[in-house]
Image 1 (cartoon, rainbow, N blue to C red):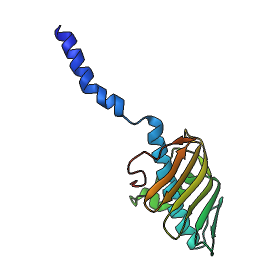
Image 2 (tube, rainbow, N blue to C red; image 1 turned 180 degrees about the vertical axis):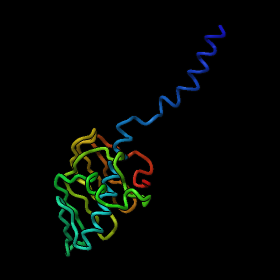
Image 3 (cartoon, rainbow, N blue to C red; image 1 turned 135 degrees about the horizontal axis):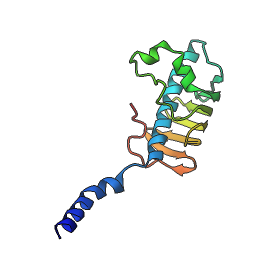
Image 4 (tube, helix red, strand yellow; image 1 turned 180 degrees about the horizontal axis):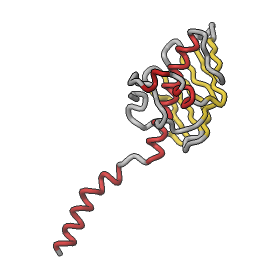
Length: 158
């Protein structure tokens, strides 16, 4: 009887953690988004100084004010490993945090601060990602065709 009571108590204690734990793919989706946004930010700044890396094209629509970075089989791990700052604690990604090998697609931002991502990835569990924000709200966020817009603090990545 004591064993049954103990088993029930342990089950009750462990159940909420097991039921509400984020699955591994959800964590990888968040990591892929964080890496994509970090890559966009650093590449965008480098293109402002005329140093767009291979596989990257930057464009700005003068009429709408929308800035876009086009990635073609871009390897962010190789890009960041060439930057000496990536190992010095500046917050730049380093090897080991990348959840994919290459990315192909577009990341854009308009004058209102809205973000748009339409990306395909190779080498990880996340194969496709689409994101659209409006003001501070996520309008659409899908990865591999599944909706992930319910994730709280999605864009507050550190």
